[in-house]
Image 1 (cartoon, helix red, strand yellow):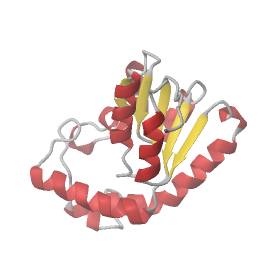
Image 2 (cartoon, one colour; image 1 turned 90 degrees about the vertical axis):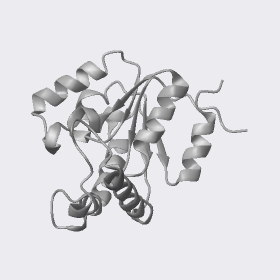
Image 3 (cartoon, one colour; image 1 turned 180 degrees about the vertical axis):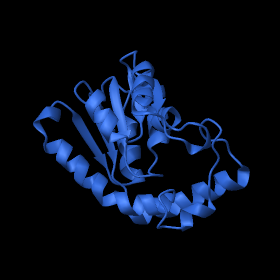
Image 4 (cartoon, helix red, strand yellow; image 1 turned 45 degrees about the horizontal axis):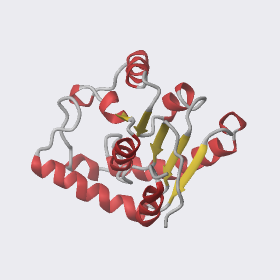
Length: 186
């Protein structure tokens, strides 16, 4: 029998690209009866344009107004300042590069091949991701940021301002399934 988990009513799922943040976030929101907020959908404007700082903060405030949500995505600069003072739980999908890099390739290829609409008017850009030196390369971005995310989250866990947060660090899909099995049960 899985351990029963009280995840709270304000939850953020963070981690590298293709760790499963949105998938887990949607399932958590469904099980707990909370709003689901996908940060990439709020952030990206048509043609992969970034919004102004003020516009994104405004969108975040509107999307989270209920006070009962699961948020999927990183955007640490915005979320830690705006939400972590009141957040209940941060679920960190701390998957290794050997897991997420192949997932990035498979997901990007699938989205590209199917011409899937992502956010706004944006579609997957498969071929640029192989140019690791470019800023719009998802593979390059993940390789450059993976260690930095880990350091940032370990630092946040040690930060007294965030001592009230329940930290859940999951390192693989089996740990995610086991943890999720206990959520929403009572």
